[in-house]
Length: 427
Image (tube, rainbow, N blue to C red; front, side, top):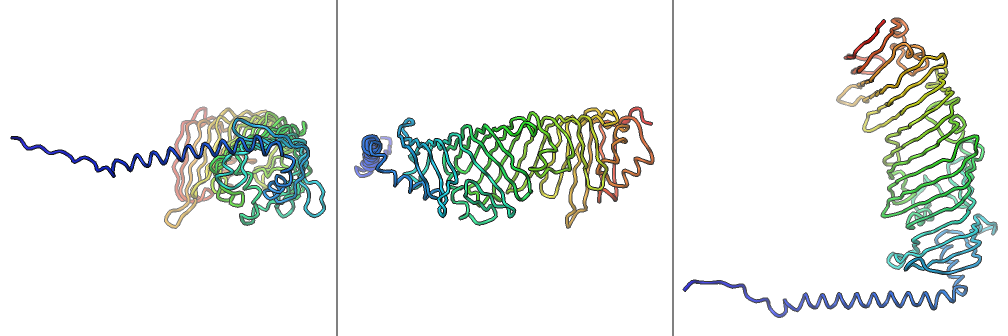
């Protein structure tokens, strides 16, 4: 007779435990659903009909989050799907001391998020501002002043309580706004943006935004700015990382230097720009710009003569990481004031800083280098003096293609180097 083995049946207690857990979970789900329905009914039939009687609680709650007294005009209620909505007319933030209005909004729409209950914090699914007029000022010390509120980006986290609360809201929208930017630190005149549209989406420490606006016509065409930033607090912006994008179909680049710290001294230049900027831990890591400019005048270094170009187009860029800097162009072409034309070329310059175990080094690569037009602008370029002297001495002509140059040591006095390339029409 063969021997067989069988697993013993589970005990009654072991069978009943999963059933008890399922039963408890089902009851808890029913209880939560019932509580949620009761809450919806209470808001619909008790809170909303008595909205005016809750005006004080609403203003106190908003004032607590903003940090300044709040005044509300007409109140209206509604629903955005399952979320309660509050519509406010004539919303005002007033100065705590003088009572003067700091910010006035014709209309404000607040859609409350149910996560307010989970986090015990006022959260909005959407906060929409209609036709706001905002004055943004940076004082001489670098502090930002917006609607009477002060933000010090160099202070501790507590200084950014309001900004951090705004970054916890799911969505912030501005329709048909007006912004006036004043920069006392740069001693610049006010810059006004009209017809401003803004949208900010916040999700788990990630902040994506888009802004369009119309600057003065003599300065630029309507601008388009977008960003994707990761960071938890404005007070910890030094630890944030992200990507920014700006597009201008027309801009007077020289005019913008009043408000922006341009990396080079631009005396003149008009045209179209698209710029991408990527940064890590609050520091720029890579910048790329597509440009088509005319009547360009610039000084690439303080001790150089001004470079004048009738046209400049192509892509220019810069990146930096761990002791390495790289400058590059793609399909860059220009026409000099004398009429000399430099055909589109790709160029890359890489510089490695010296370390405790390795000397400085560098490399230069290019796809197509026309020597004659380069000679005409060489005295305007930030080249090592030795290179400039050699170019003047030999006065080369022709084209150098698929070229590269590597060296060890400082670029101005290399210890060793190696070069290669193809020459055509050399003279």
